[in-house]
Image (cartoon, rainbow, N blue to C red; front, side, top):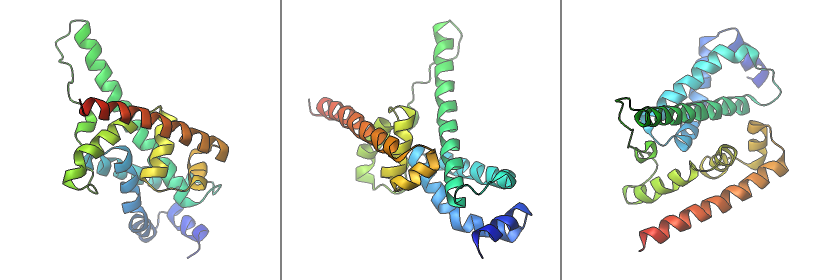
Length: 193
């Protein structure tokens, strides 16, 4: 079935078409989610939200890009939304403790809940450190680096997902690599002393 016909079936609410969409994209969406949020349960929850959003919004899909690009754009946005909410909760708890409320500071770091299923046990600590470093990058750098290096997207796919120019994607990627290199050098210097 051609993509346009498939989309028309989705818009009509055809359950078989939606089941095919889930089969085709479920693992890919989950992989993208776990790249941004390296905690299996949270990544699964976000993936469910992505498909709910796709189901609710398919009628708004204009066809300016491929369906897969649109789905990845929703996935990236849902992941970033989750991270922002998580960070806002931490800041709120911290501020409440400063001003004397009885809510304790959240001393856990979200990214120590590292449970990325594709990482071998002996590499978990190193991978957790890398994911922590990635998550300290500015948002645009984090998104582009994650899509390229962790999710394996081509620069052209990233251009389509983010709406940025190819030159911009390349420039941001260069800055992200430099930033990560500095952050990881600091970490490994501390670890070796």
